[in-house]
Amino acid sequence: MRDAKQRPHPAIPVLTGPTATGKTELALRLGERYPLAVVSADASMVYRGMDIGTAKPSQAEQQRVRHYLIDVLWPTQSFSVSDYVHRAEEAIEEILEQDRIPLVVGGTGYYIRALSEGLHELPKPDASLQAELWKVVETWGIGPLLAELEAASPEDALRVQRNPRRIVRAVEILRRTGMPPARIPRRAPRFRYQKLILWPPWEWLEPRLEARVERMFAQGLVQEVERLLDQYPHMPTALQSIGYKEVAGYLRGEYTLQEAQQAVVSATRAYAKRQYTWFRKEPGPVTFLPFGGEAAWPGVQSWFESIQGWL
Image (tube, rainbow, N blue to C red; front, side):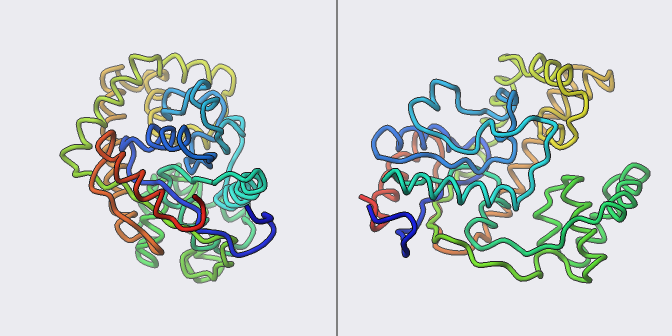
């Protein structure tokens, strides 16, 4: 393979799609057949100790196929999209230098978009303005700020995915610059990408979402969250993750265990629907595969082998 510092490279393959479509299992199968390493594109798998609720690949699976950007932060640490792009591009460079193929895998659409289309060159955070915006959230919830953002940029309102931290940051930028983040110029991406989006019908995915949540609770999600809160009483960013937020509420006595589980199902279902909406407009070279899970394997393998320049 050519020197990693030289250009151009073949397009970097990206395997993505809504949650619970089988991306991890399919990536492992590819990794057992081809000389690749996985670069995770998941906003929650970066945190140590958050294993069950993120459906993180096990240690045994990570030994079978090398994964990057998993377990790189403590739950108290923040992690911006800029941090992600920087670390992901470093990981891609390292994999190329090892004469292997970087395969980006995950369902955090904002990470994938920033990595493949270029990162918006945003101003540094303004702590004082953010503090004012957090007071609005604490008093009125995210509704007023989300409405302000949506009026200026429906794209940004979708991108933040009702995450309070992302909403505050986006509105801060809007008020300071007069432009929403999506309209601020991007820097060019360092690599080219070719994306495969798993696109099974909703009727296939919905029962899998419910089964996944049931499995997480059976595997000990409550105990995992309890242990994390004991170790890290203040983990605001990590607690925004689906499953952790709802179970933390149960542990605080806000609702019953059954109500917490149903809340996780509802949040997971809503997140998957937002992913369908997001990926439907994914730019660049994109292939939609109308399958998920085991049924997707022939299409995934054929797509991977069709990317010119690697095999």
